[in-house]
Amino acid sequence: AAGSAVAGGIVASNFLPSTANCEASVLVDVSSLTKVAKTDDVGLLPQPLKPKYKTALVQIYVTSQPYGGSDKSASGHRYDTIPIANGMIASGMSCQLLHYVPEEHDKFFKVLEGFDAVIVRCNPGQINAAGGDQIKFDDSMRALQKKGKQVWPSPDVMTNMGAKDALCKIANLAIGLPDTLAYYSAEEFATGFKKTMA
Image 1 (tube, rainbow, N blue to C red):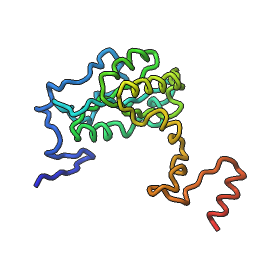
Image 2 (cartoon, rainbow, N blue to C red; image 1 turned 60 degrees about the vertical axis):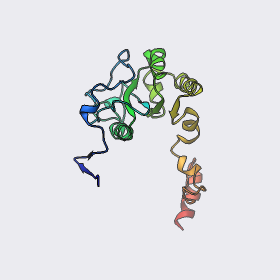
Image 3 (cartoon, rainbow, N blue to C red; image 1 turned 90 degrees about the vertical axis):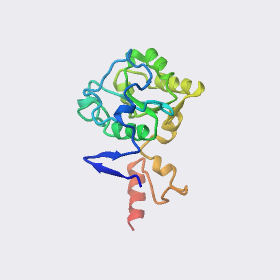
Image 4 (cartoon, helix red, strand yellow; image 1 turned 135 degrees about the horizontal axis):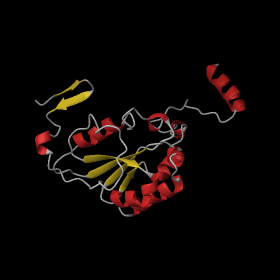
């Protein structure tokens, strides 16, 4: 029986593609875009030779913030970027890591048309903080969706569920917890919190 082991945070498994099978992988050409990451994607698994689907993981780097934002490591990637991408790769999909550079907006979205799906990992406020326009970015993601591309999460999901109170919005669903609450004023907090502690 095939098995897997975890060593130093890296999953070793015979289910994962080997380097020998991935060297000639046909990926989306992203060479026209600025590479922002400070490292050569350390820890990223080799891309599959014949991916089931081609995906991109989109991030943003805010030059005015240490490491590009509080969600980034010294590499310039989000802390969860490599694990998410490796999960996609381990499932037989390619996953290329991209940083959205506002000055390259049109070129960036033209390149994204080559992917089957886009995973958006940009914290709220970071696109504007990097000199971009969140509405323009979201509208361009919606345009990709209209062309049949999958965008996860979609701009509309982010608008409706992306706030820190998203768990409150699903509190009464089967996957939620009915005692999950959010307070929007000091008065609500004083009243509501005291009730829950009684």
